[in-house]
Length: 125
Image 1 (cartoon, one colour):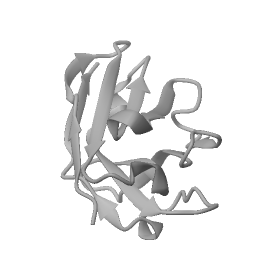
Image 2 (cartoon, one colour):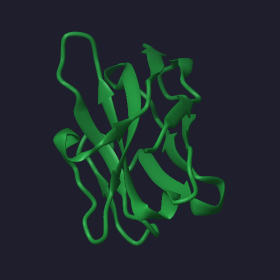
Image 3 (cartoon, one colour):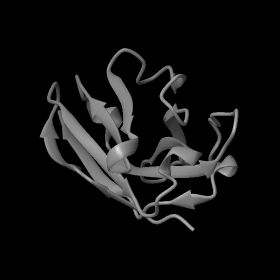
């Protein structure tokens, strides 16, 4: 079992930056591939970014590529999402997710087994 707790969301203006954090419980954090997803009101949950167990591989959605950076610190059981150049379309609840993985870094929500409670990001234009 893994428990995930996100933090770092808030209300910002267009063009600002935010860094989200997600802390995982347990002592086997490096056994999990990690992902960030988001869900805007009235829309389906969508993939944002993912990172492999030892940060060798990262993936981004086209909508955030070049603006967002996912990273992780296995010593701190934490995955981060640095978000730059935010715009109104980035407004959503952001969720981190984990899946026990040997070789894959999934980009679909159904592939992940554990989810945080979400943190709200609101970007005013």
